[in-house]
Length: 395
Image (tube, rainbow, N blue to C red; front, side):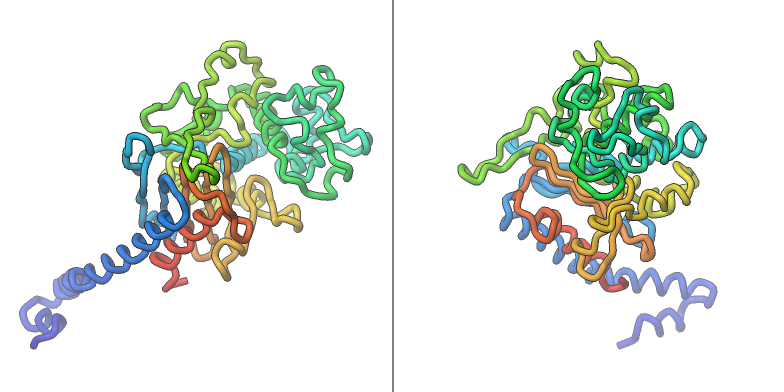
């Protein structure tokens, strides 16, 4: 039996044979690739059956290019509508990196610095009463080292504004600003407000105009300016009944609140800390921008040194930088950079390996809430299945 290579040598001119040989070789190896793909997709389906899951949307980047994007399960559980790749989700705390990226643009324009006092930036006094002489800087706010707490809530700035609340001391921890770490959503709602005050643009419009649109991405923080048909309903699992229940607040309209909007103060309406809505595919493209040091397809969003500053851990306790954190617990033996999100029953994950240029995005609109090594178990298992099936051999 003649080998493929011998056929090429016998009948094809030398200038063409190499190209044709590669094409024939691809046809021979395609079934093997399909088998490998079926294997890891079967693994994902098995995870969804073993751990209750409504739907999953995933995207994989390898060698700096997106090589895989697929959705599993349901968009609408009641109607049994399949989840599709263009469906958008409220991605929760991954939203924080969009807010930080936007502020870095303002740093580059020299409109503020990371070491500015947030009291000056936000327009009212923000001081830990136990350490009244210690400034709380923007860098501290973005890295969760500000000593702020969510104990008073974080849906409005009234909780920390002394003119609006006589109990603001509840917003602060017992340690001095800059000396310890506590994850705090109020930090990023303050940061979003600062972006609005410094840029002069409403927060939701700023992120769309200066981050999403330049990268060719569809999404945003304002429910009423997005196509509601694309929203993937979010479901919370109830262990007692073993059933999923839809979470209507995940996509609640803010139209009435926006009618009374006060620029530079009402910003938490859009939730800079967790309100971005975007597809897994477009989130992966945004991730590629960070993977490439602030640039994608010739479009620079932030300078490389500022993107690297976002990654650099300011808290060794949690390896958290500014809107991005470092982990070795998601994929064994790999140091990854990114963020997770949890809200209303949704779980999301966006992590990349900067040297090997691979990254994985996984979003579920409802799944088993149990955690393994600091990550939602479903998200962690699916991430590893994608890594094993599409990336591991060469990394």
